[in-house]
Length: 219
Image 1 (cartoon, rainbow, N blue to C red):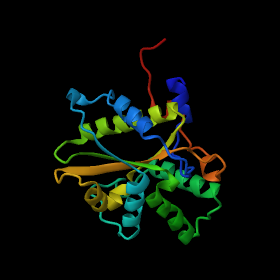
Image 2: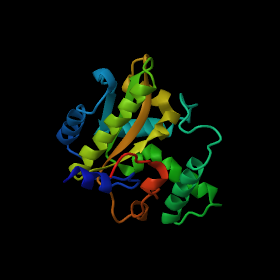
Image 3: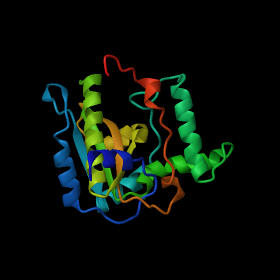
């Protein structure tokens, strides 16, 4: 598979098959992803991978946990356009794909809560970094996560990055014994997509290049 094909196929999958993912494949993906760039080669990532019985115990623990104040704002307060409109359209298209109307608040909350089950994925990945690191290292961790997602796609797997887990950062930290000087940045569901589920049969809208890119000095 070409990189361009992996980029085109990758999407945030929100319904997975229960089929297990071999541990050796997960190890290969994470090991290959270490080639991702990082400023000064700091390699700021720390990863925890759960599957099988540990993942079952984790889900049981989360089911009895409450949401927590996040350590960072996933989105800026009072989001403005064009970002507000893009986020709104994404949400509307997602819920429309599974027939949940805008005024169906219980239905929307029920769908949101499926994050805690990793949308049925058999593997959970949690990406962490040292608290003292800065925003540039957060960007490095994001590039590492993107590399993981593309390598997973190359192997026929699918993913969903989940900053949702920032709402349960203390519970996750306790479960994985995260050092106190580290923080949870994001989780990720990993597995095989369920192509029969309608939530996986739509794609987010993307603005054309001319909206966000200026090219100067080219022929």
